[in-house]
Length: 169
Image (cartoon, rainbow, N blue to C red; front, side, top):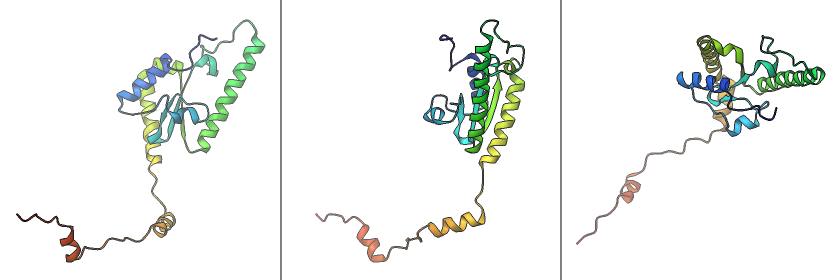
């Protein structure tokens, strides 16, 4: 298991390529990625969206790739149960923090065009949620907190003193 990659896997690179081709910018190893619950594979801060690219085997998708090893089945079952439990907890915590969570499964990437369409639809939905206008009550609070405008037109005396004087020769 020590040779199994945790980052930069082929499915992750595929999803990043789809996002980049669609014009989205994201972080992969940024500080936000490491501080968020579950350490998301891809973070789109502008859309307050995180993307997990799950391997079907490790995260128990239920497709044909999520087989059970023949040896040490009790140990593997416990490990898989922990993985699934952690996934659920982390996704719930991210949702509580206001993040949109998208999960893409390894086996879905065989149909890259379908995944791309689904991903773009989710991101456009997230973009409309990210644009939130303040309520009337919030606007009142903000205006009350702002200092009054201190701008006034300069007097002619102030205006002339601001001009540089020419040296007389």
